[in-house]
Amino acid sequence: MDDLDERIEAAAQKRTSAELEFQSADRELRELLVAGRAAGLGPSHMAKLTGFTREWVAKIAPDPKQAARQAALKRRVTGSGS
Image (cartoon, rainbow, N blue to C red; front, side, top):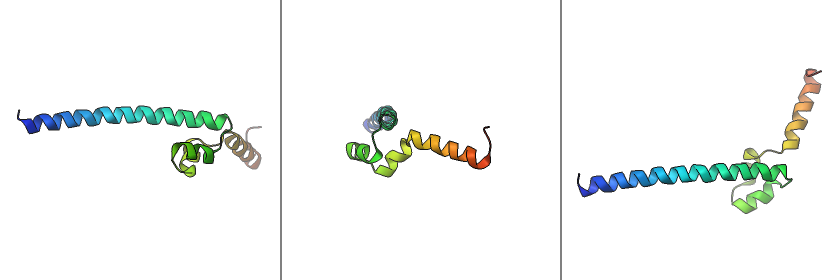
């Protein structure tokens, strides 16, 4: 195996490691955003903390109260759940 082959293999291993680290950090951030919404933090506030858009934060961590309201409204409109 020549030097180029070794460098390619090393770069591939480095990329795989970085991808796993990214996925772990992403999972942690998403869990913290959900916990933040449950604690009453708004998406605009968390967007400022993370540097992501408010829309992305709201998509990842929707308002837990809003989901309950939407489900209740749907039950009332469709008449199901009685």
